Picture 1 (spheres, rainbow, N blue to C red):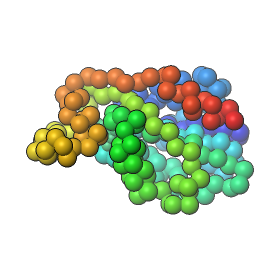
Picture 2 (cartoon, helix red, strand yellow):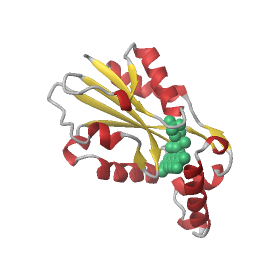
Picture 3 (cartoon, helix red, strand yellow):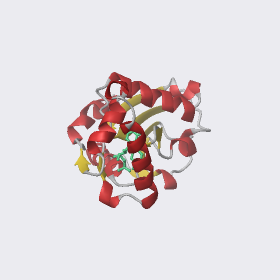
Picture 4 (tube, helix red, strand yellow):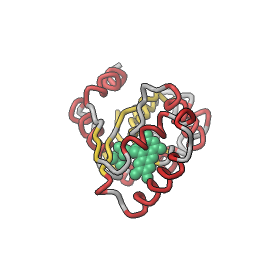
Length: 177
Ligand SMILES: Cc1cc2nc3c(=O)[nH]c(=O)nc-3n(C[C@H](O)[C@H](O)[C@H](O)COP(=O)(O)O)c2cc1C
């Protein structure tokens, strides 16, 4: 197979981006739970939602994968915090170092997109996690809060949607190269 889009999504925003990319490129998109062996796929495009810093499903899918010379991996994170913020991008990269071997990370093209959240739709476990996180951040002085933390405070309890298909343009360019 020439290319495959693999996505890991809990609440749907990452899946929406994956389906849009699939529609625009003709590359099939499947959930990471159904991902086939990757050894004969030339371009692997992985999209994963950010959960407590880590990318959903990433370790499971790519941990033991070592790309051959003719293979390339594009990794796209989908989170609430603004990826225009350098500190936020750094945090994501640091988290990725814990999820993937260094030699693999060095070969990956990385992109960041913004997703959505609807607190009404969160699982009880996620709602509790967010509540604990919110309370912990609230106790931190504002000047010490990261962009990620501020995004969390600003969106807490609400329904927000930052999904923007125009943000796929740079990724489409990379895929078409
Ligand atoms: C429990 C939980 C943890 C989250 N952690 C982060 C995070 O560390 N960084 C971030 O930018 N967004 C975080 N988010 C927001 C999600 O990444 C965002 O809702 C994203 O759109 C989820 O993708 P999905 O809709 O495909 O599941 C978190 C959301 C939840 C519910």
